Amino acid sequence: MNTTAKATLAAGVAAALPWESLAGLKGMVSANDKINVGVIGVNGMGWSNALSFLKIPEVQITALCDVDDNVLTKRKAELADKGMQAKTYGDYRKLLEDKDINAVIIGTPDHWHCLQMADACAAGKDVYVEKPVGNSIAECNAMIAAQKRYNRAVQCGQWQRSMPHFVDALNFIKSGKLGKIRTVKAWAYQGWMRNIEVKPDGQVPAGVNYDMWLGPATKRPFNPNRFHFNFRWFWDYAGGLMTDWGVHLIDYALLGMNASFPKSAIAVGGKFAYPDGAHETPDSLITVYEFDGYSMLWEQAQSISNGNYGKDHGISFIGNNGTLVLWRGGWEVIPDEKRMEAVPFQPNKGSGLDLHTVNFIEAMKSRDFSKLTCPIQDGAHVANVCQMGNISYKTGGKVTWDPAANKFREAKANELLAAQYHNGYKLPKL
Image (cartoon, rainbow, N blue to C red):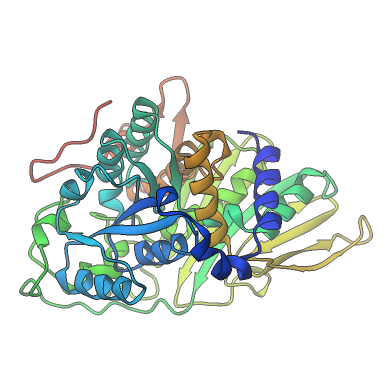
């Protein structure tokens, strides 16, 4: 689906659905029209996604799955307060056996996304999967193959694509008014992310199925630093700030330039803020991506908030005539001398997450997957670009992509194309 079509779609959805009217619509949908949704991973973003889905009149949450019984009990009670009774599961495969479930939300740690999405598609479910879609390039490719084989609707949770002001900014970039764009920057300076102090291994908390939490990851003793939110700072399960925020921001850097895969990447950084911290991923990183005719720069820093243009996150398109600066709060254009008119601050116009979940349900109902604002192919594309940066960091040098061979030209980099699966799990081969 081309960028213009996606921009038009997102803008149309935003204009057509006034969210303040949803409360009045809730009781107007017949039980026969209900879409039954199961949620796999209900502690963090999985639950935020579920609450967004519940704003859609047709949707009801009928099943919950989590490896932590404490979280599962809490979420079941919250649904009961809303008048909904949900089945609960500790093993997602049992949830997928439920023939009445039409779609699943996958909100588990990154290292589980590939297996769970592929299994859900094989079970005939449509899927809303959290970002980043995979924890390796091989996983992303397997997820694309699973969607194609089973022909299911798969939406990636990159909800910035559904934010109307992001779409407006993208249309301005496409107008050519910025002139030749020579540099694109994306950054995340996250001051609230502080040090993770080293903690000893300990007992698995009561009610937690730790073996299921680990899944295909390396078998290790339980450590509280690796559990729940902080899993994202350990290579076994995720890719650090690069894949946590980078997939959101680099996504629009790529969209604005109609970019395919970079020719090369070189990343430098390290644990500069907290060298003795428990985290494995870098707290400071700069990555330069090479494209024909321009460069893209990614910057990340934990415990620092003062990023480019005074913004703690964003994307900038630096052209001969001016610079467009885009972030979740809005966008503006800063002219270069008098080569163009400034564009004053254009604020955020709505909930990207809510618009994104509506888009998924509409694509489900129509079975026209070209309507998806962020299909698996697009989510995998940006995830792979982020993985390329992390691979450069891990190998300690520049990595170059061979599009004909669909791999790197460096042997050390190719060793990191696929995440290693353990404990009897295998990468889906489709």
